[in-house]
Every structure is written in C-alpha cells, then in structure tokens.
Length: 178
Image 1 (cartoon, rainbow, N blue to C red):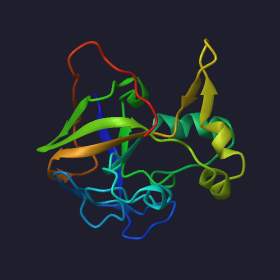
Image 2: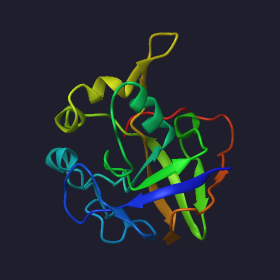
Image 3: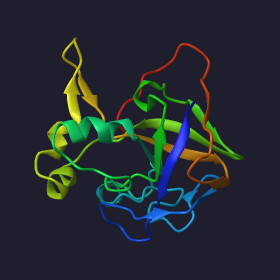
C-alpha cells in the first residue's frame, strides 16, 4: 500500500527541510508556508532565467526506499534531508508517467516530472549526486532524486495518509526533468 511516510517544509530557501506534523496544500500554488509555494517558479536558478515560468515544481516527493539504497552506499539520509516535501513508502515514484495523479485525502497532486539532481547534493554529502544517478540498460540516465508535482486540489497531508494513484490516459509519457 502506498503511504505518506513523512512531510517536510521550510519557509526559507535552503537544501534540507525540517519535518512537520502535516502540510496544507493550496490548489495551484503548492504548500502553505513553503518557500516554493506559488504559481510561478520559485527555484532560484529558474527565477534567474525567467521568473514568469509556471511553477511545475510546487511539491517535491521522494520514495523512502531511496534512503535504504543510499544507506547501502554509505549515506545516512533521513526524511527531509534532500529537500523533499513528501516522503512516500510503497510506491515506485520514478515509474509513474507524466500527468499521474496522487490523491492523498482530499488533496490531489499532478506529477509533472523528475527532480534534476544538482551540485547541492554534493555540498550536502560529497559524492551524493553520483549516488542518485544511474544508467539504464540502454545507457540513458536515471535520475533517482525524486519527482515534482503541482497541486490540483488542496487539502491536508500527514504521515500515515494513504496515496491513491490515478494514471492518465494512454499512451503514457515517461517522466522527464522539470
């Protein structure tokens, strides 16, 4: 069963986010009180390029199974450490197609794409960026640092909440970096 393992937010731009008891998702904006909340981009590198771009990165989700994989590589990573807002359990986030909907209580998140790992990972833990990248059998790059989404319907999200997945109509488009 797919569940919310933990939730995190920060009003400040930074790398890690402290754990929270719950999140309030706001339709079309993101997470109330989070630095990345808004209709237009909030990630500093993207704001520098074009501050009018739509915010396709309102919410960052990571599967806690990644933390187990990273522990086997020598990295002690906890929920919120990588800047995610929602840590999930029991769901292969990376296998979801673009446009998949995750319903958590009354909140609905539309998946927009992959988080593109950046050098901040290495600033946090040397070598971590390489640890969250892999290669598929065809040689293509696999980005494991989570997925991004936008809020389609607001509501409260808390640890222990069940996640219901609704796939978009076929043909499914694989996730690309956003």
